[in-house]
Image (cartoon, rainbow, N blue to C red):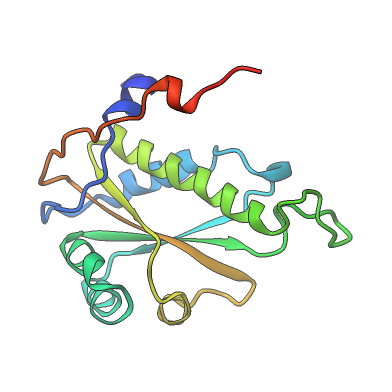
Length: 178
């Protein structure tokens, strides 16, 4: 698949087939995501595969809003992306390199998340990025180390739907030259 085709054809998927994802494919997806750019090549994103149905159910039924429950319950796998805190956007002395402060960490994890989604699409998998959840409780369930921060959950599996492309904004509404 060509890059632009992948970008234009990837959709958020919320309904998945029950088929398990081979670990080899998931490892290829995460390996591809390690090539995502990051601040000074800090590579702060960490990946946790939630393969256990019981843990996905616990997360879905107790620690996400109703509108995300069905998606997680339906997904055969969940990826949790965390970041190593206080590295991206910082100098070695702990000062910020950018006015964005610690916000740069989210930027790096966002790039990694998009890379996961596009890589999964290449392997015929669907994804949806979930950002509303009980961070503290899920971090405890997943045993995320204190020096890391849970940023995003990505439901992943073989699509059982083919959503149409939502309307895109016109270029003249979002682009300008100076």
